[in-house]
Image (cartoon, rainbow, N blue to C red; front, side, top):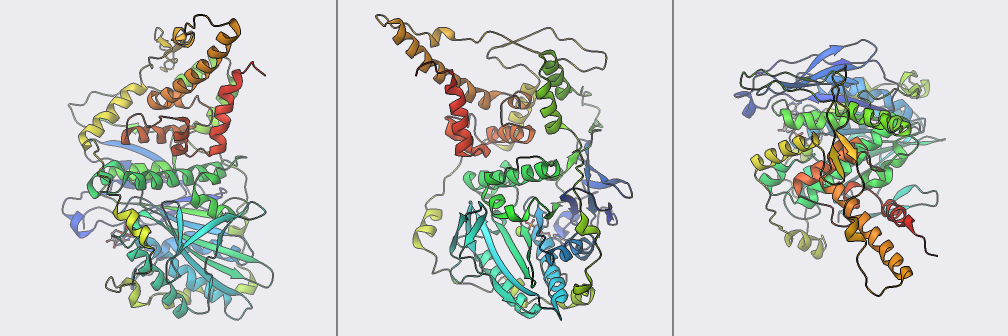
Length: 589
Ligand code: ADP
Ligand code: MG
C-alpha cells in the first residue's frame, strides 16, 4: 500500500476540556494506485505536550502546520485510540462526570469506521460499552442506552420502532431534555449488540424512507450509568459529514441540508473553542446538537474530538483540521513549481491590529487577541478525572472485555437487513420527495475563481465609505491597514426632499430613512466585506467571518434581511438586539 504510516503519538493529558485528536485512515484499495503519501503527517512530538502535524498538498506544495493533542496514523487501530483517548474518561462517568466523544470529518474520512467499527475490528462504541459493562460487574451500577439522530435540526429516536421524532424542550432549570427519548436497560454485551444493531439499521434506512442520509445526520449513542449516588453519561457521536460545494454539487445534496450541517458543525467548533478558552459565554444555543449536549459539554465534563481525515484529500482534510485544531504560528506556503511566483504573505491580523491601535481601540485589540490567537491560550482547568486512578470500586477489566466486544451481532453489518418504513408519516416522506430543488451552482472552477477573487478582495479595500490611503510598509514588513474611514456616503439619499413637510416631519422621516440605510449598509457589509472587516462587527469573530465567506460562495449576497443572520447562528434575540441598537438613534418619545 502506498503511503507511510506513523505510529500512534499522543501528548500527555492536556489541561483543556476538549481534546483534539487527528486520525488518518489508510488508503482504500481504489485510492492506492494513485496515492503517493498521505496529505497529513506527524511533524513534531513533544513529550508531555501537544503534537504538531503537517498538512501538505502534493500538487502545489502548499503546507500548513497545526497543533493537536494527539495523532493516529494509517496503521494505528481503533483500539489504540480507545486506550489512549477514551478509556480515561470512563471512570469519571461512574462519578457523575459526563463525557462526549465526537467523530468529525468529511464523508468517507472514516467516522463510522472509527465509532462503529466492523465485526472484526470493533469501533469506539462497542469498546466503550464493553468497558462500562465490565466496570459494572459485581457492583450495584446499572447501564441504560439511548440512540438518536439529529437530522436537519430535528431529533429521531432510533430505538423506537417508528423512529419517531422527539421534542427537545427546556426544563425548568433551562437544560434541554429530549422528551420521550427511550432509555433501554443494558445488562450484557449481547443485549447491547442487539439494540445497537437495530438502531444502526434504522439509521441506515433513515426516517425519511429515502436514500441513505446517515452521512448527513448526527448519530448520538449515549450510555448512562447509574450508581447508588450519581448518574453519568458517555455520548459517542458519529457526526454528519462536513460538506463542501463540490460534494453538494456532485451528489445532489440539498443546499439546505448542507448549510444546516455546516452550521451545526461550525457551532460545535465555536463551543469547543469557547470552552478551551474558558470564555464566559458558550454558544450552546446556536444549534440543536449543542443545546442537547449542553449537560455534557463544559463544566467538569470532558470531550474528545476525533477529526477523521482521508489521506488522499488535502483540501478536505485542511478544512477539517482548520475547524478542529489550533493553527501553528508558522504557517508555511512553499512554492515548488517554477511557474508560481512567490507569494508575499500579507499579515492582515497585524494590519488590523495596527489600525485599531491607531484608533486607540485597545479593547478591540484585546478581543482580537482572544479571537485570533494562533494557538489557543491554555486555561488552567483541571483534568483531574483523567489523572485519577480508576476507583477501586470499579476495577478496570476492560482488556478482557475487548475480546467480548469483538463479536458484534452480524445483523449490524449486514446491509441486506431491512427495517420497514411504512410507519413513517406520509407528509414527512413527501416533503423530502417533493423538494428536489435542482440547485444550479457554479462549476467547481467557477467556485475556485470566486474563492481566488474573494482572496484578492480580502487584500483590497472595500468601496463603500472607505478610501485607500498610501500604503506604508513598516520595519517588520507588516502593512498598516489600507483603509481610512470617511464621512458616510449617500447622505443625500437619506435626506430626501419632502416639500411642504414641517421640520418635525422631516426629522421623523430622516430618522426612519437613517435606520433603513443603516440596516441596508450593515447587510451590504455582510454581503461584500472581507474576513478582517467582518470581524469588526459585533458578534462576528474569525470563525463566523470565515463561515460568512463560505455562505457567500454557496450563494452570492446571502443576506437580504436581518432575519438572514440566523444562517450564521445568531438567535432571534441577538438579531432583535442588533435591530434595537440600530434603532437607538431614536430621539422621539
Ligand atoms: P465516513 O463515516 O466518515 O463517511 P466511513 O467510516 O464509512 O467514512 O469510511 C469510508 C471508507 O473507508 C469505508 O469503506 C471504510 O471501511 C474505510 N475505512 C475507514 N477507516 C478505515 C480504517 N482505519 N481501516 C480500514 N478501512 C477504513
Ligand atoms: Mg459514516
